[in-house]
Length: 326
Length: 271
Figure (cartoon, each protein chain N blue to C red):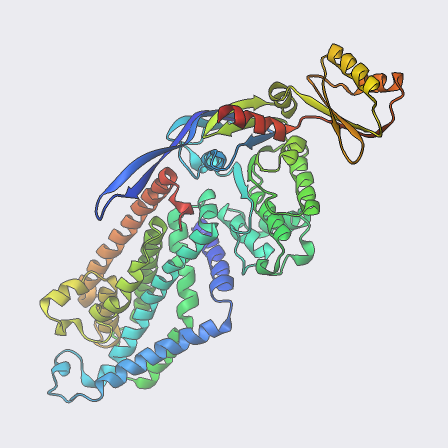
């Protein structure tokens, strides 16, 4: 298990203040953040830009030292024994950097594999298996500079798996990828956790992706933990309102008064609006009002031409949460 | 040792594919030193090179070609590593430096392996030319045959230690590019590549002893030009050993300090 407790990270920012003097300013990138990752689990780390996600990932992967706090991975202190931790973790970032573009996929993997102490046939077989796994077999010996963005990202995943890490930190791995490629990567990430039992920390701005993949989510803002829980729990806690939009060809005065009275009784807040499509009724409640409304519509034989029940999602929760804290 | 060989192999493959991918690079690495050598040789021609010339007090005039080619070859060994260290900037920009530090491989080993790998790639072509030129030019005076491979080993080892040290400095700072300027012309002039350092004024001699290349050239020329035995070159050998040990120790300390600094400031992502 990976356990990070009360992590703090501050940077000293030096700003020029005249010719010779410099003004020092302390910037808190991470402020008292605690999280745990079990093997086989995918944890989402969410927050707006500058919230401290990348700093957290770099601390967990030993690239940055926390100003205070502890990180232990399977009982090993990551701050005191980083050389042992480096064998158990790896990091994958989105984007096209972090690869040698003139080298092929195989050569990139062979290079990084050797730095992890792999050699000979073990290294060759591992590289071949990873190339197959990410679907680059056909292009394994082609220079990376000729790869598409998606192919580079797949190679990044293979590179991150070269040391067969127990914990993998993914920093916006689907950044800028088109939908089918992003989908393939999501399937791969899920299988790494569920089939290969790897503990995964994922940051992403695509909240649907986080909702689909993550078992637990931590939401941070200005380096501070705002909320932790399953995506479902977070949505339920933060977003109380559910919305239902129906459009009817016509809705006369009498029916509208009746509908308004009935919905009020049920605790549904309803509003009517005339549109080009017809009469639109927007309803809001703290519960799923689908079946209650359909029963009412059936009673008065209301002709629906659109019925749109919107479940709150993680995006709604994040927006609501950041609004509250601004 | 196995680890060093593995990392060296990794660096060599990477360096070959990444920095020496285009064959024209080899051509320029071959042609540029030759032009330098010809330039140095013919720069002396307009002057009085007779037995009574000021130069003849320091270099036997009939061995001027040998003096210059030994200077050139040693300089190329050292200079190529300044260039390779400069390439660390690319690793920083591309983010691969961060990934290298993400691995458990020994940082010091990486720095020295990188130097060794780049050295071999950068100098083998000119080395062949230089060896052939030396044999055709004549004037070699070697006390024992084994001193020749010994001199080559001294040159190789010194250059690798020098290169490892430079790589470490470039690892430490993104602003280490000034070293490129610092080590280009001054190293060539003060180390006695073209001019014997004994002809320098005192202040220039002091600067000369800052560069390990000075000691390497003294040893190399003593072996191939003056036929000196191992016993008679033990003082410059000890001086060189002290400098190399100091550079290696400094590299070990600086690598640790650079990584610690990077972990505290996150400066590896600045470029």
